[in-house]
Length: 99
Image (cartoon, rainbow, N blue to C red):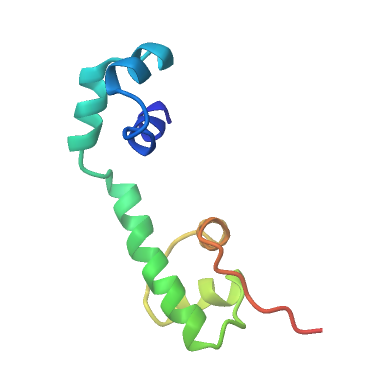
């Protein structure tokens, strides 16, 4: 979280000053910059692509339960319904509400 803040504000403050104020090391920040994303994060990005494809293919009317079913049935992706719900919510892929 501190490293993300430092990355976003690197043009406003020096890395040394931010590291000192946030109580982290400069070397830790630079190591964070070079680090590859973890497997779970990469998997989430891939899933989010599939989710948005399904979502827009059905004219933004599918919510997380239907998207989850299509992932399971059509794409043979066995993931939790709550994970699909969380990914949709965090990325603001929300269905249209039809009264």
